[in-house]
Length: 419
Image (tube, rainbow, N blue to C red; front, top):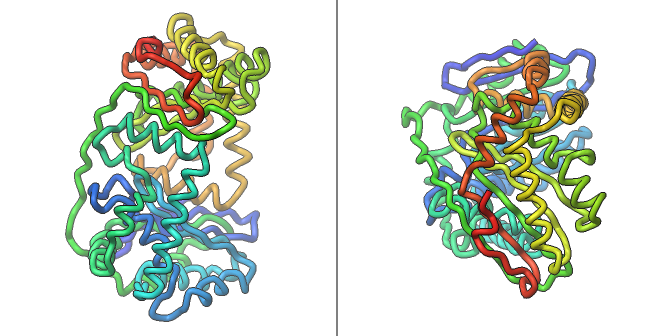
């Protein structure tokens, strides 16, 4: 049901037929994110993602918005560290409209000077909004410290200084270099016919020609231990602890995902039970895995009272050490596996989730895994394989921490982050 085809101009197309639904989710994915930017161009990918919606050779910004809403569809875009995505979800009968619209915005944006300045102000407000969102701010603060002097440590939105420096000329130059067929992956999932999708895309993207620039080499990051803090007048102290993990396509990914689930990925996880349920120290506490092409980290986030910050960090470190030394028991591994499988199967009932899943598999693996293959991978995880991953990861001396909030009562030394 999953088909892959490379068009003559270099665009890769993936489709998955889901005849039981009436919708189609279509995504134009660009292998271009914030890590592909120089320091002076930090945020330019995100700015372009905004700007292409502000008018094309064929449509005004209002007409772009109406094109999907008038047929009951949805359209949006986002930029990440390693890719940018423009997507639409529509009824199957309106697929040609979605192909036409998405091709228009990624091939023929106007970069109107008036709209450019207006959207610059919008992006600057988005950057300032992060300062008012401590759960987002702490991620940027941690990344900047952990991936010091590397593009992965820079914020996706850029800074007020970099965004303020972009000229129409520099934006056009970057756009022409990045938005080329070799960088583009188009994915569709839903009630569709593969050959019809191919014909629509070939017609809509016919004017896009290969540049022959070739693949870009990425500089592998080095990670750094350290404590990064930002004092803000908040009622809670927001804390993030992180340490090196594995890249997205690592062979250890399934035991890693199970380890994350039982550590802090659900309400029955160790950290949720110990920090929230048993001690009442936090309302929000969870763990997560951030994986990239050639690097990754596992993090634990908690929001607590300023005077409880050190205790929360100590409990986190104790749990990591316990998993390193003793591993999990079979019952919690079984519960974590079932939680992961249930969450995965429920999420993939959506055409948009299926579309995104296919795209990320192609970007990071260069191939597609069936749902059955993923479930088998999860089922093969044992307490021993989880323990092996925990023993390797949680022996690392490179533990980082970020904290945002009232810091007067939060004093922590780097030695207290030693596992």
